[in-house]
Length: 259
Length: 331
Image 1: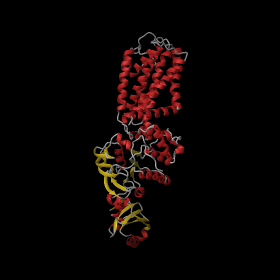
Image 2: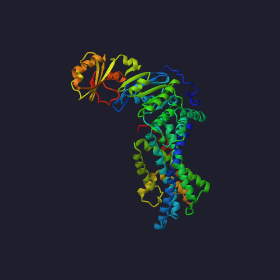
Image 3: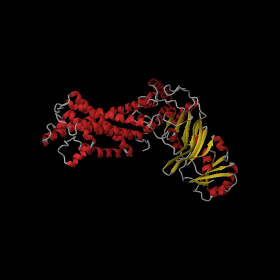
Image 4: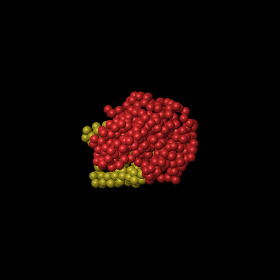
């Protein structure tokens, strides 16, 4: 039985469901852009941050990371919808291992998350008030940003599956994802640089997987001549290792249609 | 209408190639401390319409879950279509679950297409078989409709069509007609009988006695995860008293149950509120004695044919369809 065919079929199904849900599609792009406009302009004009030369552009990588966070949360929750609608047990009664089913669902979450984040990046690039520096040249910088987006989504979708294996209800899942991921987002360097933070927050920032993704996107899109908070080699190494490990364990979890 | 087997699923005919479609031996499965399957052994002949009959909690659904690989038995042997159960083996099995199992955001056609891809059918073969099956279950004109817009009977027929997509040699059915109206039940059974006529073994879990008697050639009576009896419905009933009398009492009877049990020719007496169900050798002398001794307390009587419910009650001491504890009586 061709596993790749099954995985692609599952991905197509989830992607189709995402495209049909227009409200999710539009809000996933509009919400970060709205935050960019309101928060970016508000902080730039109202607070006049001393250390950030162009806050709206600085904020953009953070908004892209936030898009990935929200998207992976929503997509991972589709596991609960499949369980509650009874579709999961039908899939598990097919001639494929639970791992193939989970792989199809998780990969579709990665694709949806990455597409949403790339849409935000594309729209942001077209806004005159946002000035990407592309310090490695447009092609390489873009490649680095896309890589960061994809790997970040791999990590977040794997994390979503790991949490879904422990949490019984969708409501509980959303609660825990918000509880875990919002703090991650706040001390990731998405909204303010990690450089000037107190030591304890810097430590948390260093332990935070999102920080490496945001740093890599800052390097690709915002930085101009500096080496970033962690540096590109460190970002690449940590992000890739964590994403691969978490995705692997997330898709290896046991699946029961009854819980 | 006869439908060709799915070419992409397997190059085979529906003709059964194994003496037993399912064979389980000493099967044990626990939910915590409770043994849902308690050393269950039984064999389902290939090509049969085989009913697993028992009340809720007797282990019927758990057995089907084990057979489809959703649950792993603690001990015992499972052989399906001549081989131990594996992922690949599931390509030869279809399943209709007790609870609804359709994605409300998918159309009828998409539901079938996903199943075809999951079972490795080639696109053209899957499309052709989908058309034929949707036509068979009268859903061809609803292919583009979201499953959420279908009626209960249509949803069940779609679930059946989906389960038949891979041309299964064995079809597992968990209470397939539950909550369906009589007309929908009849139509669903027409499709099931067609599939069986083409050689597909049907293994049905039910607590609907009338349905089991009407359609199943063989039944296995289950109680608390154990096999109580197995055989043709007629054979199982043959050992029982021949007639069954239903008595409606004016008031809830008290001493009457013990009194009737002591009468010659009386088999089992079941009490449910103001009604008792009595199996007897012959109804006439029993009724004469009943009216003689309790006439003013009887509101009405009805002579009925004995059913598998009576067999079950004789063997287990309680009924199939009534919730546990609702019936009293003795055997």
